[in-house]
Amino acid sequence: MKVLSMNSLAPYAANPAQSIGRVYEEPSSSTRNAFQRDRDRIIHSTAFRRLEYKTQVFVNHEGDLFRTRLTHSIEVAQLARGIARTLGLHEDLTEAIALAHDLGHTPFGHAGQDALNECMRDYGGFEHNLQSLRVVEQLELRYAEFDGLNLSFEVREGILKHCSIKNARQLGDVGQRFLDKTSPSLEAQLTNYADEIAYNNHDIDDGLRSGLITIDQLSKVELFAQNLSEVKALYPKLEHRRTVNETVRRMINTLVVDLCTQSTKNITQQQPQSISDIRQLPQLINFSDEIAAKNLKLKQFLRKNLYQHYKVNRMSAKAARIVKELFTAFFENTGLMPDEFQVYAETDKARAVADYIAGMTDRFAIREHRKLFTVEEYL
Image (cartoon, rainbow, N blue to C red; front, top):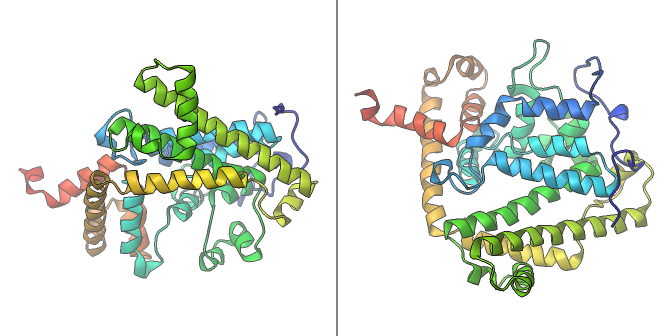
């Protein structure tokens, strides 16, 4: 497949010169296009730095080599840029979306999110996708003239991967496509797939490294088995670590090549001429049916054997307890939170508490819990 250059943008790609724009008008940059500027703002944000100490699957203190939300986001950005380049789409936009997509994640990964959502059940709920948008629109306080990062519409659209109709009605321009049942940019569509590819394959790597899953177990999963067989045929005496690395990288390549090939077929069939056409068409970025089925089997394997492993469940139970106990403590006494959250709590107490907890890293949440519930901290 031919790889296009940065000067070979397809007519249906997002174009920063034709962006729908920002909520607050700003002079354009003399050195960067709008999407490059958005990417830079995300990288310099406080929420992005915190991703270094937020869980992917394993809690941050469990090992130095396991993925965090930060390393995951960087890996998603790398995959997304490569796919965008191949399809003639805008690389800077895909990178910005990829780097921002997990900014709203709680400490302790999905266990933390589920616990916080339960705490917020009577107050509008909690969903990390919406929280990522909330971070870039409101919670980052870096600029004199507006809250948030004032990102381009196209980046904000890409961050919001899914949304209920109820929430969409409250989100203005960025929620409108869920009401109109239209599609986001191809850059947003492909970044969702890059996220999934990175997530699944790197969780295999971390799962094997941790010993929670084994190569023998994975050998029953067709997508893994096919690539492992190829590696063993080429390198029969290769040591374990390199065998795993070779297999995982070949799996990633299999998925990326298939995604690019099938998506190109879809685009060629539909013949879009502009990003406006893309928004009126069904989703065009997809795996082939064959690879989609194999990828689903991989996801099902990981859910059963890694994410529901009893050791992961034990840590998840601890994490959920920490989040719930922190929420209760702060909700009952907002004076336990920093001043800025106390002020916000005067108008929306539950959301202020949720924002404070969601912004915590794993180790900060553990430390806050100890300060509040462990007597020895004060002796």
